Length: 528
Image 1 (cartoon, rainbow, N blue to C red):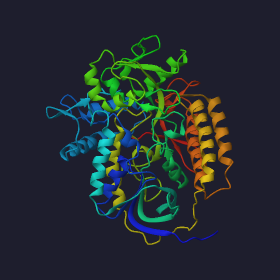
Image 2: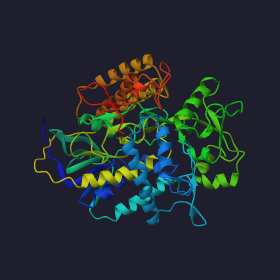
Image 3: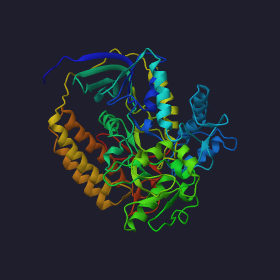
Image 4: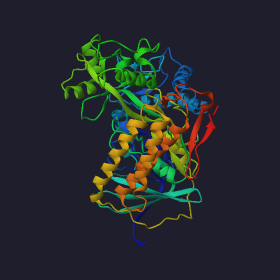
């Protein structure tokens, strides 16, 4: 082994990721010590930043915490942990009212906050900002508070390549700075993984290019337990333009009254669910999938012609402007849409304070599995989870006492640009396998085929351990194998896991799947 001198920094807490969960964790950890935020792009690139819908909280006069919890549990299809859900809805309301008191600019009419309606919710309880730009506004709002702290340090364009684990304890990270290709060691009392989702492993997704599952891979390799990885939520209404990235069209558009119609101009949700277009996301995505299967088209349409056009342009100004780039008018035209991979429901398993099964290693946000999402995330609970569990995680991580026995290696990672095309080629092959066999609808035959093919790709690069692009291929394949194997073991349809060979829910699978390095998949009961 060639030993290289590396730059070494020491922090109390290291947060990996700059989405809302990471920023919130960093802000609260900074109450107790020095914090580093590591992000492989810019601080403002994340799933949180792109979130259009809003934040769900029971602040309306006709609403209640119990109703919010009931709606969330119903959407979760029996897999929500009651204790985690109680934390989310109770502390979530307080987090949102705190934001209001801090002058977070939620949209108002005559001084009163506007509350929207989205799929699965029985009351108007979605707070939004700048119409359909809530994620951007709240992330910037939190960033401003981060930048006011003189004990929080940001490292942009820097990717974490390894965690330092000894005796099931985490003592820091190793990172690679893209521009200089420097290897940097960050010693830390605690590490928080807040890297967001992984939907870029699919060919069609609403996620930014950074959402490739790095955090899940880091956690799994470190020995942490991962839970419910089979549940990948497809957003029902992403813009469908040939050869263009999917663009998210918020659920709030349907909340304001938009219809889903097929190529014949017929609404098809009214006969399938009592909430019609506002049914939970798994129901709507599957209905669109079947509608596409039974037609000559590769999409359906959103129709808003019956609504107040000026109100629509104002309420969804960002979406309206984006669609104009494609020659479409949200208020007048039929908008072609189809489901796209959107949200990772499972993740690194944590307790109610973000602690994973590895000591001093925490997880928060989409990369974490806190127990609140169940088998199907209800709309606009994700930003709420980032606030609630980001706060809890930051406080818990910040309170970890200093270590005296930190151990780390000096193996240097390198970045060989000649391998970038190899990475893209294998990534695209894996993405097609995931789309075709581990997408909205799955079967044993398809899952087994995908697992075998993805395993071949991973095995192709076993000998390389220090080149970033090749490691990315192995990590990408490894995360996809976790999803596919969990989907194969769960022989039922529940929430966003739909098996065409097991079309019904099965009470014996009213359990969380759990995966851990070196062990077979286990199933554990939900927490009451």
